[in-house]
Image (tube, rainbow, N blue to C red; front, side, top):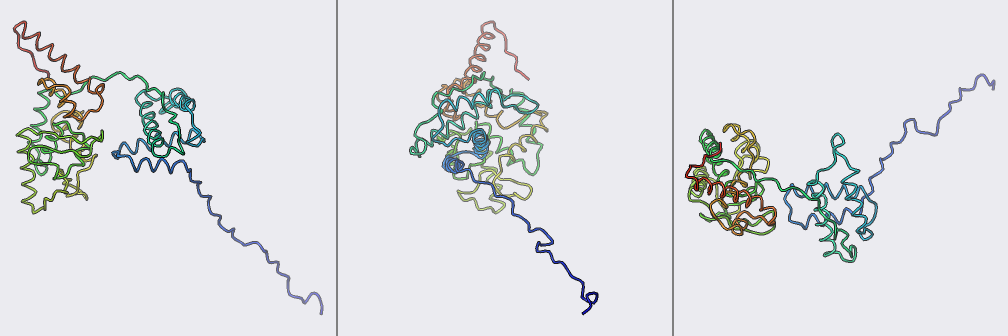
Length: 334
């Protein structure tokens, strides 16, 4: 056969025309994090505290490759130095002493738990002797009588949510934290006193309510009965009334939104839930309530943290005594 009559030779590549997609390498699980997850799941932390602990413990793991049992006190001292000197945030600004203490608190809590629960893995607590930074005690911030009156007047301007919002402000005005209000169920209210089972300090406490506050809560619950809601004990005490969460538990952010809305109506742009707690603690001391009893009512674990209120109470009492002595009427702020 004439070679010119042979069919053309086709070269077939043994390599696929399209490259076989390669799976992206899966991240290697840091086994140290498993112990942190166990700690977070066992600790009774609020949602915000859990996020903060996760952030700080993750940052620590990013800083060191050492295993839990290999960490010594000197390593924790080096990490604190890293937080104070080497780590910068936002435009090169170093961490504040309060932020450094928050990081150390997360580490101290974790290692204390790990030594107790897993002594074979963490035989020694390397955070023992690790000192917190000194933070000046901020002055107590509280609402003046005039500002409180503005809040009550603003509540009366509300329409659909007035009963719910009045009940919320009355609870906050008894020193409850926003997170504590979120956790309250109907069973916590016996018609006179609130029983707080889940608190920031993990210590249940009783909060006696003023007669006016009891009446406001009863009115709010009566309106819910009239709406044919089944008021079983496990139902939330304070409900969301708008959006897709209507009828569900009012969230932490929902409480802040409600208070900010009231503040805008009242002409108090800086109003936030914790201001009511400060005001309650200050009022207790100005009324002459024993500081130990006041601390029990507010749920402050630290005497040092509560000291800001005793200082304010002592100062106000001294000012009042001065005006009584000179025979003048003390002018109210605001």
